[in-house]
Length: 116
Length: 113
Image (cartoon, rainbow over all chains, first blue to last red; front, side, top):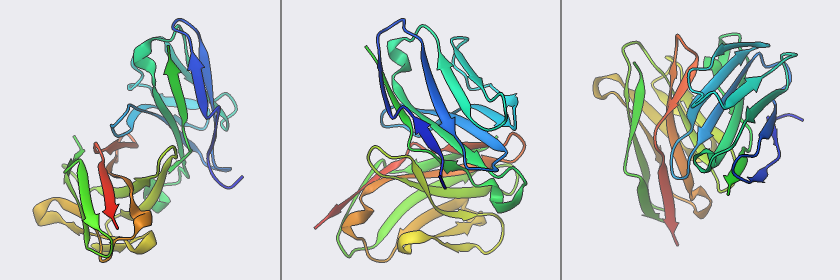
């Protein structure tokens, strides 16, 4: 497809359950970002990949959060032992990575995670 | 350090009236600034961006924003609001060294018929 896609769109998990969220970036985009958006807030940075390399994971809130992009395209954000405070919308974005276009980030529709 | 502040978490305008959404930035270097719109249950869609070219930037759906260095502002405007403009609007600044975007807390726009 032409845009960033994410799956699942909605996920309900029981507290303590592990979840995996998938992101398919725009084809050819080198850079990929994950954001967490709490209700009524702006997106907050979690982590950033350039190709398969995770260059910045400073925004990951705990060691229960793990992200990977093994082949430099699709990325997965994994949350282990989910807690209620993990409930949020998880947004994925990609950018060209060449420095052009102001490195505009293009966002997917997000995955809405609810932890009960 | 870079950040943006959006003044007014909720703005209501009548259909056909001027839309003005405020964004002030803080940056020690010339910033790249962006406005995104988010409709319910959707991701963020780029409205427009400033990347150090023209200070008056035109975007989609009739929106525009003016970069004013002296006021450290990048306010979003639209001459005439339409019902379909009702959404959440986010201002963002790009961290040039870490390649991160920092978002404001958003402004919810309501358009009254």
